[in-house]
Length: 98
Image 1 (cartoon, rainbow, N blue to C red):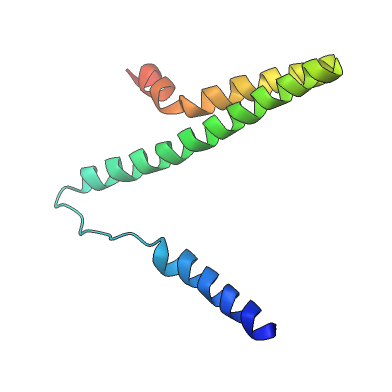
Image 2: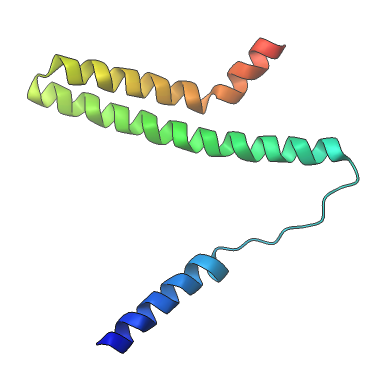
């Protein structure tokens, strides 16, 4: 039983480290392009986190309607709107900058 647990943990670690690795190509000669790629990567992560928060806010709103809890409803609306703002942060910053 102990050997089976060790084997499962080893396979799980292998999948996390080797199975999810990506190939990193050499950067271009333009350092500005490297910064733009990093910025796009960070904003894509923020977009994913924002949509997750917005989804959790919608679930919280649904649960608040079920239990008739107005404070939870307000909290859910704030979570959903905040998640949408986080998801759209790149476009908001670009609109502010010009």
